[in-house]
Amino acid sequence: MTQWIEVNTETISPPTESSEIHGVEIVVGLSPYDIPQKVRGYYDRHINRFVIEFKYLAGRERELVQQESDHISLVVGKESGCLYEIRVNVAELNADRVKLKMLLPEIGNAIQKLTKSPRFSAKKWHYEYARDVITKNAEQILAGQ
Amino acid sequence: MSRGLRLALGWISGAAETVVILALACVAFALDVDASDESKHFLLEGAVRFAQEHATEIGVSGLAFFAAGRLGKWLFAERSEDTRIVDRLVVDALDEFRLVAFGRQLSAATPPDHNRVTYFRHRHFVWWIWPFRGIIWPWGKAFPGTGWLVIAYRSGHLTKRARTVFLAPDHAADCEGVAGQAYRRGALRAGKAPKKLPDLSTVSYTGYWKATLLQMREFFGSTKPSVLNFAHERQLVHAYAEATYTSSRQIWYRLGKKRPCPTSILGIQLRDHHNRPVGALVMDSCNEHECIDSDSTQFKQALTKLTKKLRRIERLTYEGS
Image (cartoon, rainbow over all chains, first blue to last red; front, side, top):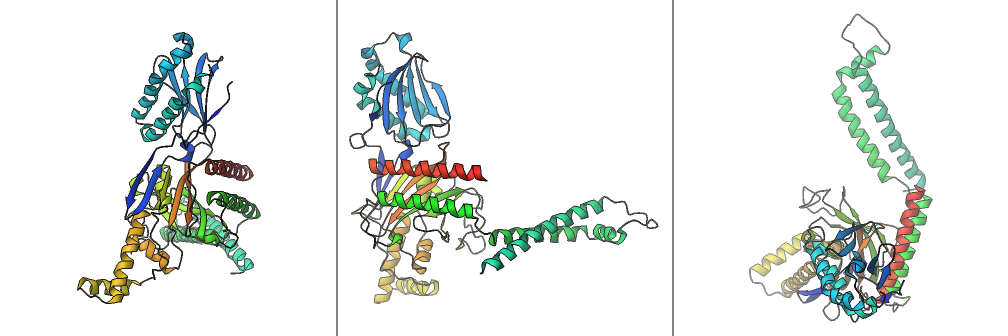
């Protein structure tokens, strides 16, 4: 398996919403438990999938697998809705690294779809941030194929 | 109250509860006995007939005694040695977290109350709150089972005497305080340099009647310094209350108790080992050392450590009980 890639919150800043109440700055942001600390990409021979995995500060919980398209499935936390894994069926696609890069928009769409499900709609910021992390670290993540 | 008296009262309350349960069981048994034939005589005849005739009164007073016994047991309960150890471990973990959260720039002379870390735990039911939020109904516009955040632990404190509670229902807009908002929304900061919360250290508490009088004078156009000063203070308290998602009444209560009002507050959601929200962690500051950003590496490392410790303590507590 490949090395974890540190997510730098200074270069990829988590989404926040700032407002002012009577001149006092109010900042609402993501829970630190929802900000991925590390990310990596690797080919899992057991399930025959290319996996993009996120690591959070509180570890993993009970999970459920959401099949978002024919060859992309997402592993999310049952309680928190945190995105833990994105599994791409590269064998079926016969995809190499270049093709995987072309799949990035599709991966983004699959994550976007999650925000439309009533169960996970409240986690919109979290999924958008996870998508940003993948986009900005794409080269390093895909090197793990 | 001495420890001996406390133990005795706790024991009496527990005994009263047991006696009531036994008495109610006897009454239930007596009601089942056929005593319609007056010519028949049986064991404890008088007691059975008395129980049958006064079953309602015995039942109602029994329940009242039971409730009183429960209340007594709760009031006079003594923390066990295990609980003391758990409390010490959690407070130590919070103290350690405090040093990182406030940037390791606190001197030994900084009062603990000026830079605090408070662990609020979510409770579905809160049966007692003080001060009351309404004249008749203590919970104001809410119910005991609406969902509340209560102080579980605070850095530097072991007494657990703080009574602050915040409303934390499912609807985020109704959540009170920075703690309530953080619990539902993830993370919230109220006041960050240079746009901090109003400094209320110079505001002096004004009682209800005096406040009403000053407001009336203000209404009739008085320009006396005391009236203008109170109007200004009232505005500051109102601004503070709105920015911290509380009511002006709660802020005046704090001022009346001479408790410091922080100028910067950061709240984050806390989660258990299933990743479910269990409460909120609130870092407040009354001086220039405000809490570092919650998405900074230092903060996340410290939070990881604290979360692991809290979960380990929680697991030990469950296994031990």
